Image (cartoon, rainbow, N blue to C red; front, side):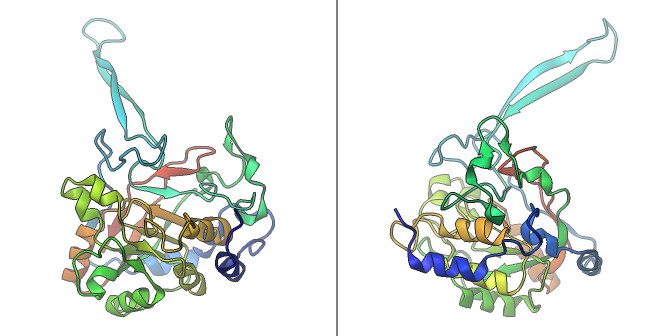
Length: 308
């Protein structure tokens, strides 16, 4: 199946291949400069810390809809083991098996491909079964801290949670930016709140997964125009699901990750942050969201923390 012209036209407008050189592997994270980080640090006023990750647990957010993406299975492999002899210090250890995108996570730049290519024009077959991602593995994101901006689309539209069929548009992002009281600028990490995570927190992960509000195919141009470094939201699929364009699955993934080289995150719990921001009267903050450095990974868990 050939990708439709509507997708390819947007792809040409947001493409960043070669922008930071032919050897670049981190895409829009290049926009987080030392100056951006210094300015981000100035957003810390009260020191209030808000965790944004969902707990990693065996009955986590995954429903089985995505093949192989298993919730964490943790097993004890040592229980108060006196490994150096009776009466010595004892240790307890555990091991875990999980999908790297099972919980709160970043999608790496190799998470999707289209037309045989990944970010910066590299062949998609540089991702192999043996080694994973030869280029742009998630370990290349050595640090991810910047100014975070909460775009609370649900609040901007006067609801607590967007309906499942709502595709977040650039106009919605404009409204949320106005509510935030600050302009999104180069190097920012944008967090888009839909309120969808409430379904999971309320115990209904099937309703959380499907149908889901999410970002429209029109939003990558909004982020590209503002030179956003990374985007995350509070849904399982990131973009609207089922798709807004019939038979065009994961177009926003293809535009963000492949064309722009922009990380995107899913399953972020933004409910506490929304409340804290409303209380503080501002929606900008210091954000630490560095992923676990799995070598060759197409994504990784993250335990992000916002500091107001």
